[in-house]
Amino acid sequence: MNVLTLVCIVVLAYWVIGMTWIARIPESDWK
Amino acid sequence: MDTYIGLWGWAWVAVFLALFIGIGVWGMRKTSNDEDFAVARGAYGPVTLAFAFAATIASGATFMSLPGMAYSKGFASLWYPATYPIAIYVGMILAIKLIKRAGDKFRSNSLPEFMGQRYNSNFLRIGFALVSMLLVYYIAAQIVAAATIFEVLLGLNYQHGILASVAVIALYITMGGSHADIMTDGIQGVMMVLIGLIIGVIFFLGVGFEGTGPSLINDALVKQDPSLGWDNYFREGDVLFGSFWLISLIFIAHIPFAMNPHIGKLAFALNDPKQIRTFLLIAIPVGSILGFTVLGGLHARALFGPEFGDVIRPDQAIPVLFTQLFPPFLAGLLGVGVLSAIMSTSDGLFISIAVIFSNDLYKKTFAPVIHKNKSNEQVEQIALNISRVAIVLVGVVACWLAWNPPQFLAVLLWMGVGGILAGATGPLLIGSLWKGATKTGAIASFLVGVISFGLGIVYFFVLKEVPFKNPFAVAGTCIIIAAVTMIVVSLFTKKLPQEHVDDMFGESA
Image 1: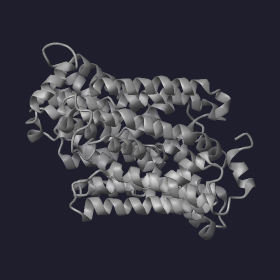
Image 2 (image 1 turned 180 degrees about the vertical axis):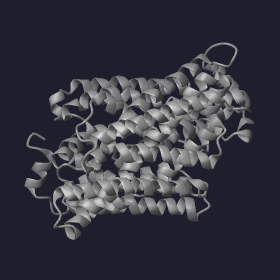
Image 3 (image 1 turned 60 degrees about the vertical axis):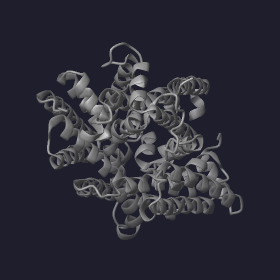
Image 4 (image 1 turned 30 degrees about the vertical axis):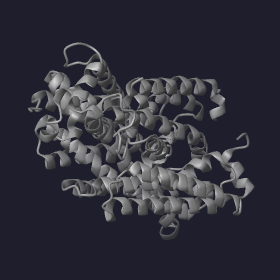
């Protein structure tokens, strides 16, 4: 696997994991 | 290589500068006191702020230095855009809830003020405010980048470019304060995301080569120098990308990045803390897309070869790529987008430094002593006037610094940013997560972070002719030291009054 592919996987994983995590926290918990 | 794009460049620059100054006039109508000027509290929704946040983080470095780094170091430099957005947004997610909620409750007008309120400490407020003044070098570096864009695309004299950049930013910020800052940044952020996407698309299509796909770019780079190719996970012997540990330090150095006063203050402008979720959902992908600019540096190196570096500086890779691949109409628009990246960071920096004078020093430190007989309204008006005068003064200092950039401009820039980050890690980042953080722990961590970073930079960059010139490694190491200091000292020193901690974190926290 080349470094471009690896970096693309890292960025996509960050988007999916990060956004899923944030989306699961109820809005009211941020208050 | 001819990069001058003629009238199209001037036309786009004129349109955008007129737009920004128009927003400055609009912002002036919404600014009636120093709080409006400093933070525009609760005035904006999550979409505008997510783009403004990304635009403020992305600076001249994102569109010029990073592609220049990729041009020189090849595919191994992709680790930078892969790691820094994750670190910045993780740090922000950890701290934003307390900063927004308690900052609004105590009506903080700046991060130095918030730091002082968090620990009931005038020392921390004044200390963090004074360290934050080093951000003027950050502004100077942005002005240098803006003048370079004017020079490359419009053929404008470098010094005239400096004057034009400072004059426009100072004008719309003096008038509109944070309202002008956030609205212009929101628009600039959208433009920058579009440019990031365009750079990504033309890279993956291999535009300019016969055929399609990024392997064409890799093949061209390997032909020039095998160490530039994508089979190199790390660049052997390189001070930035030489090992996994160095990449880890880049990550650590950026975790507290949102604690920079010009970035963290944007949280105060959000309408409602409940909107933090929507804000983060938009900010996460938007922040990463801006890192795609690094691909443009690889693309330029593959297309133009190493000899390009003899004619034009590597940090001009993106604007030159635009002028060579696109017609003047589009190249001018994209060039203005790069200018937007520079201006959107500079304007927030201008405000943050002005607020140090008006709020952290005058209103919170000197006014209670020298103006104790004046009403709150009078003090607010004086503070607002100080903010506007300070913008002009900061503009003059930035012009002076950028006119003949000192040899150590980059070092001084990082002394400011790195010192702020190392100093803020304990009091703001750990202090946002841990109720047990003490005032003594915060002061010790702040001093250890700032002083160790200052000494590290002086040792590696100024006094010692050593090859290890890596500000991220110095910052990352000092951030770890500051964090450990915060925890250890807090465990053994007097706790803050429980009432104050409950007030800060809220009963449900």
